[in-house]
Length: 483
Image 1 (cartoon, one colour):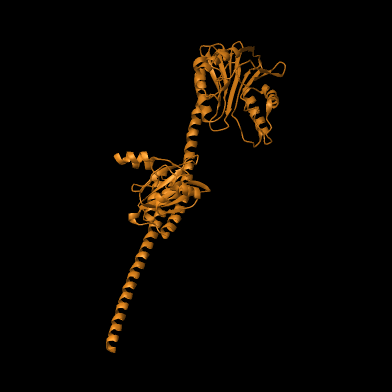
Image 2: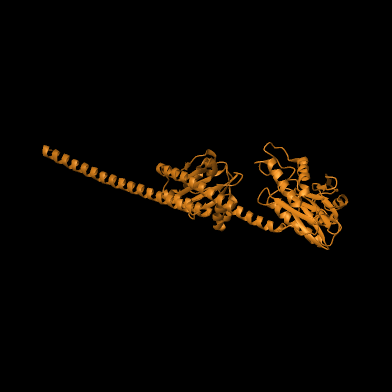
């Protein structure tokens, strides 16, 4: 072979190598272009996802809408087949499915019984996956929550979390799972998955997923804060409405009783009060005065108060004995009062012509009685059991009437224990002695003045200390003969 042949062969080989190199360069260029296109597309999808999520939160979208937007958005960003969001329940023992996308591959193990039923009816599997809570320490979801960081699972069925579980998993699926955490609190987990037939997630996918999961945690946390704030505002509005209804149940004005002054006041510790007072015109210049205190505070106490008022008004008209009225109220309410609740009450019937009065107490604080002639204060404290403690027999044996005569210039004060038990900044109780002193000083001034002076003295004592209990007072004064 001549030298010319060698030169030709060498030149041919060189041309081939150059062609191969150019081909590779073109393939690399196309690959780089595709990767650039994919990255740009991924960035655009992430931008749109975060933008839409931010708008949804600003518009106070429903929790389900936000959950769906997060899952579908992350699925789109990382090109998964589907995804799901599970949030922790109140006890943190379970993960509750809040949204599972339509085409999401199986992410949880399925009991064999469910697998057998699904062979006959494919809908069983979908229902199980979308409705079944998961233990917060089981499966790949629980594993992610336990380790507290995002995990990349190349093949779900071989993951260690399924090794000893009494569940079955047969599909070839890869997944990425991340914990959702906001404000130092675990909210749940976010997961995406795709079958091996569509490829597996790479490290770049996992890095992107971790990033969007962190953003999703922040968005979800803000959404929950917005939701809680809205629910709180809604509840406060409902409570204010309930308070207005309750105010209607209290006397709208003081009664006009010839020869007497009567006044009442109620200051709730919360929006809803468990105290109440009432004035009932019994006819024939006879009046019923009642004051009551339901144990506890808030809505439950307010509802029981309304029930008590209605029942007492129904039974009071035909009875002349306060003890009998309280007994009827007790028998009516006892079946509906929770074991941890009761009502203390005092009921007085006044004959406006004669000044004769009869009072009975159902476990209530004694009433103060200012005697104009002597200037002394005594307590009216007939025996009695609180409403709701006993079904009836014991209550009726214990609860007795006390009859007395109110003289001109005398003044009575009925009150709930929120007065004497009020605390100042040093946790010192106002107490009966301070109440008695304030009552003695104000009694000669009339019923309205008694309440005003008592409230002012109480405020001077408590200062800026928070009011811990409802405060209710009713004052009854028989006008002096000179008036």
